[in-house]
Image (cartoon, rainbow, N blue to C red; front, side):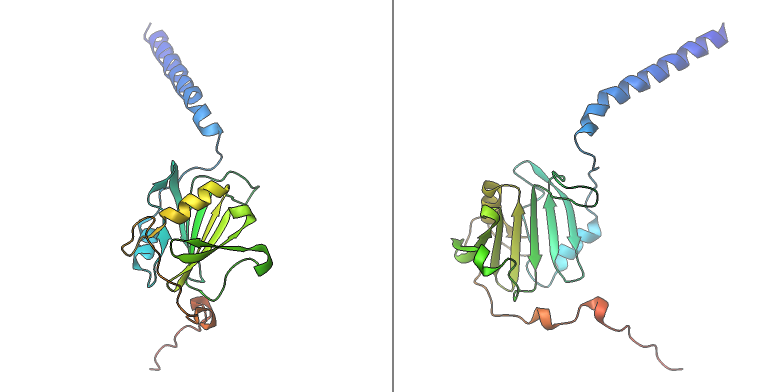
Amino acid sequence: MIGRALGSLRGRAVGGACALCLALAPAGCGDTLQDRPISHSTLETLLLAPYPVYWLGQSFRRLALTEATHDPSGAFSVQYGDCKQGGQGTCVPPLRVVTSPDNSFLPGSPATRRATPIRGVTGLLTRGGRTIVIATAGVVVGIYALDRPLAAAAAQAMVPINDSGVPGARLPAALPDTGFAAQPLPAQMAPPLGRAR
């Protein structure tokens, strides 16, 4: 009698667990990537950068902040939304904002970009307006979106995470070439020698 009751209880528990799995399965089927929280150390690097790093807040147009990275060149990349296109190892998110301290380099060839005024500075549009490049202060901000209206809205809303700024307000004028590209990357520097004993 007790064995039969335990077997019935186990059956209900397994059945309930299976029902819960089936109920939750559709929520995970649409996106093979799992959202990960942005690490505090990554966000701190954005805040402590010696130049303005642009972002759109914790979310933008119902797209959550899903990734923030800092690459060896000094550029910061902030991604909104999960990958929509691409194969294994390739991610094309709905929206990405990249701040580069190398203001000597503007991506895209001059033949493929069109200049347009954006918030008091000159922006360069490529890919039919889905990519916008803005030189402001000592940085270049690249906005990469899946569609033109999203890129244009991001260009109007971007603000520095580590400085004061208001969406839509006039941006600082571009500074002369800072010479950042001529500086070696930290990974290219020889490690310091230990003291002789």
